[in-house]
Length: 386
Image 1 (cartoon, rainbow, N blue to C red):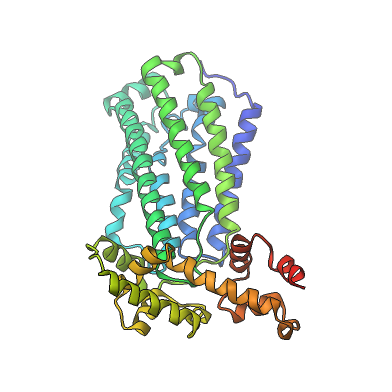
Image 2 (image 1 turned 45 degrees about the vertical axis):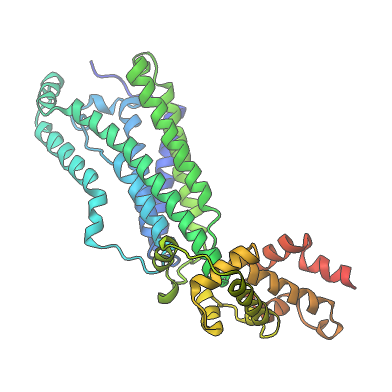
């Protein structure tokens, strides 16, 4: 007997989440910022919204209607790769989606084609028992279990790749360039933790169903997960839409890929005397030549100026200065800013103007780094110096 639709608070919250997901996806597709990465996030949010329709098929008893029974929805497996490509296209200025990367979406394509075949094979059958019998002949339940295993596997794999690439980008950022227009993407940690929580949620729910048969007695754990997923859709949409345009482009000679290759190369230990000489040359370039005034200074430019290899300069900075390249350059910039804030001759200049003169090219980055190094905001420091 077909159940009667009962619209509950849960259904309302789910519909709100799905609607917000669709709206945020449209806004992301139309956004002028991050045109290379935003479509991946928009598609990921749409996939989230699509998956969130599953519980509604049962709570609204749509599953007990001929049209919606076995309605195709294999979007679970596509969310993780879409979010991963969103992340990659943010941190890699040269990223372009190519045909070979379609392999990441093969599980989704195969499963969705399979579910569509099952659905359209049953669309002309109104008898539910007959529908279920035909679906079983297609091994539908086995396919749904397979979808579950693939989903859990993709969450683990892409979360691992996400963490690995973010770590590599951070290393590249700190060791290669001092250009503050390159973002540090600290907010991506929120995305990483959100993905981890969703993965843990899925493992718990599927594990509880498989080992303890929890779903036979209650759907509370899945209802809770669905609400959390609905909130995640809204959070992802808002945080993604609010991001500024990050498409700064990575220069050819200091690309992240080349940095990875150099990091993997075996580093030779420099003789002590040569290490000291390189350290002195770096200090001279910073103190006398004031190379840090170049807002886009990178380690290759500094190495070229000193007629040294990039590996040698990087090794000495890390070992002798006990700092990353980016931190060392910004430290000298902050010291230059402090001198000018103390100077009466510079009293007429704004704090931002001084910062730009000293090599900073991002206001937000300057204020953050200055306070990190001095414990005071630039305004507080200037007032104190008076």
